[in-house]
Length: 485
Image (tube, rainbow, N blue to C red; front, side, top):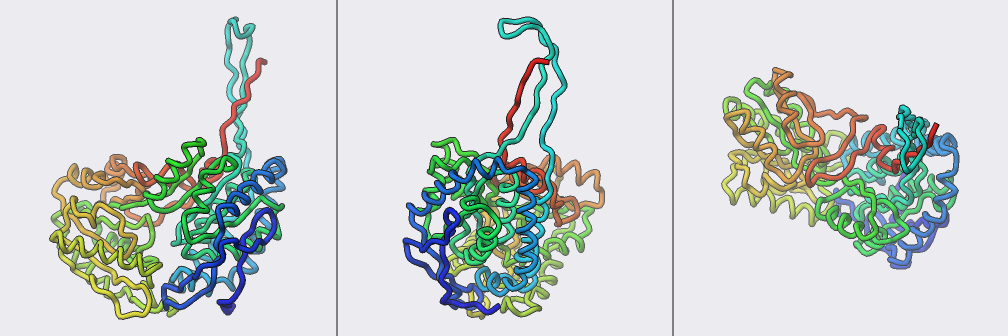
């Protein structure tokens, strides 16, 4: 499907496609720096209108039988399966994703996420009766109770730029299934595919159940966070923005679900299979140009295998082709914007200035777009800025340790705790170490996560959990109904 840069995109508010009152702003292809299209610029008033529309639609939607809601979500999945193959070119142009990532994790996974939540589940829980004695509150008898999960209410879903479609689907599919209405706010860098998704949502769902607001600045989403019509904010993005949402939302006691930054630690024990560990690191080193929060960017390596690990990483980097994201053999495409490229380069320079050794990379590739070469920094220490903060680019740092206690301390010496890893031939030892790591998720000798395991972080990596059944629970309240039997 050819991209029409002159296509007129609109906002979805209350079941109607609405002209943006703030005009438009340009979407730039990070792979070529060429224009992709003009995104609608929503105003604060339009954001508030979307919140009001979602609130107006809430009673009708939450009182729609659960099975019927799931039926409609299944219809969305079916229509996505029929239409999304033609979206790959648009998604690549917006995000700079390579062909493989755009086809598999950006587009085809979209249908899967809606399909997963199209199956009704029984959330009611009957508690065992409890004998109560006569009291000022009641006569003696047996107290019974049932625990229900009503919807949270109006949910504002705000996502990051790295996986705009799948991240948003992971929010709105379970939110809608649980009976919530939504205001969808994609990242400013790549909102057009979300607006394309909105065409299907508009056709399938009742008016106001799903609304879409896009903007280049923070004013419109800030209004949604402040709005008394919004009950919950589900956010994926930086820890800094997450903290602002937390603070602003506290004024109206917003429920929050936040998946924030990460600085994944990978502990390599002295008995680790170096080849397997290096293979795992390499699969995500340049994955989507390092713009992935679960990447093991801190390699904490036992001194006995340190040199071998650095050497193997250096060798494997030669197979990570950097270049045109549309070429089928490209492994590492561009990062999202020129500003972000400069930020990643500044991280690398800070490591060099602090005494780290640049083993691989460190230079700007000779490409038209916003490219960063896969970079490996050795001789790193825990106090370095590049070790402590998330670069969100293809940058891996390697640290050396002597004892198991030292490795665990290094892994936990971080503000973040999203996804960490332990590699050891002794799985019982790996399990023991994993239990001591302050991280919401830990992989043992594997990088691949379990897609139904609860996902979220400790410390400044987030609040709450989603994925699988936990994704449904995240968008609900807990209500207990009590009676005397």
